[in-house]
Image 1 (cartoon, rainbow, N blue to C red):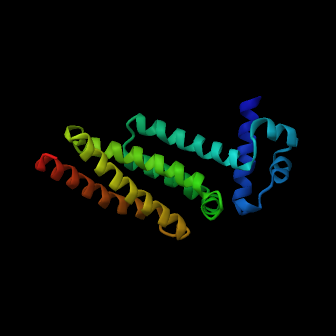
Image 2 (tube, rainbow, N blue to C red):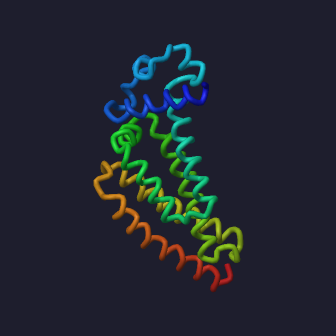
Image 3 (cartoon, rainbow, N blue to C red):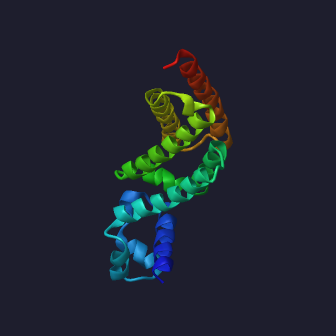
Amino acid sequence: MSVFTKKAIQGAFLSLLERTPLDKITVKMIVDACGISRNTFYYHYEDINALLKDLLETEMDRVQSEIQNGGGWQATVAQVLSVVAAHKRAFYHIFRSADRKQLHLRLRTLTRSLTAQAVDAAGGQSLKPMDRETISVFFSSAFLGICEQWLDEGMKEPPEALIHRLDLFAGMLEQAVERAAKSGH
């Protein structure tokens, strides 16, 4: 019953986010939308911020498992972008809220995992740890910047176009790994 209730709360919250800015959503709106009491909400979540954190963690954990199952970074990015595109207004409201840090932290964790996977796929395991880390941090920061710019601009660019831009980025990452390997750093 507890998992069912949490999913109902998350679903109601996501539905509200589709039409209401995050800063305007109240616990009362959530409990009314899913037909539970305030006590039930507070049994599962301390506040709306905790709910947002749990919702984002749930989605990112699902994506992280895809990465670990070897889905490849392009497939993972496509999956993330399809979730974002399916809930475009919700993510826009989160990104434009005072609690946008929650989304930023989850995206940063995801981009670091994806970039580490791409560095390893490009032969980065043979690099010195500091060189491998430098390349990973540089490209994950750029990757995160591109994703956040896309969110900030209202996600007008189709996900496929963003994936194409990130493909160009992957070529640069491979070149950086090759250069570091050749220079012996």
